[in-house]
Length: 254
Image: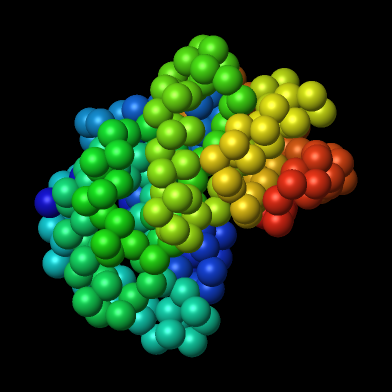
């Protein structure tokens, strides 16, 4: 069984082609800009949609039931070069379940992408790597203090895991959320790049901040720290991208 927060079909923003995204419940970080706050707690969460209907996020789900949903769209994956993305929350907090699911998807010839923040023992990666085709790896801050204070993560472990994945030859794309006041100042962006260069990163996707998850905070009765922060313009994202483009193959998402 896997604690699944949600399953999103026909996703176009979580990897190549048309995909189904499986959101795992539970995260060990606390990014204040997170757009999936319902997936952070380990326990199930109740939330009402805009029509007032209550849903439970984080229900234990059998892998066979997940596959039944995924297989409905197998033809779309084949046609578009898509597949399934394992996201969250943090997938690797449920590494054994993720490995079983990924193995079952692989057996069906379905492309599997892992989206992770990387703050887990490397042993968790080792459980899933035989069944994963590609990895999206979040990179959010440039030093241990900022990771600890803003995000709650272990900077050294996250950077070391990224380096080990790259050294092992895994298909890794680094994903950087662009958050004003956190990681977008020119000097700070250079520090972000220096860390990534240190471990041999080659490809970086930049994710401009948006407020699409703000309604979820209201539905959960939570204060949203970025409620008054405007979504980043594409022009601003392009300015920041110039720094990353000096070192990496860089793409702006969204």
